[in-house]
Length: 127
Image (cartoon, rainbow, N blue to C red; front, side, top):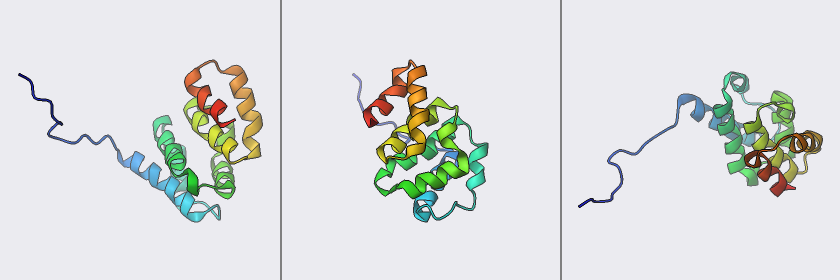
């Protein structure tokens, strides 16, 4: 007889970089587009997964994100022109939802050239 129960240890998949990346996004929100956080340059050292944590945190706080924040993030990281599809999948829908004009053309170009539904569905939903 098997007993179904939770594992005795709660798994934690966070890393110092993922925690820092999430905090970086929250710091951008707190600054409300008036500047970038002190450690903003750390983003350039993140791998794709850690950048995704940053963008997922922005999306998770969508109700607090505004155009000024998007403008600041894009000015610091040129996210609208990234080649990373994981970042595009998150950035374009947020930009479209907030009517951030600089994502319109890159999003259009991307959906015309990309065939993977995983990446395109959030963009189409946002449109």
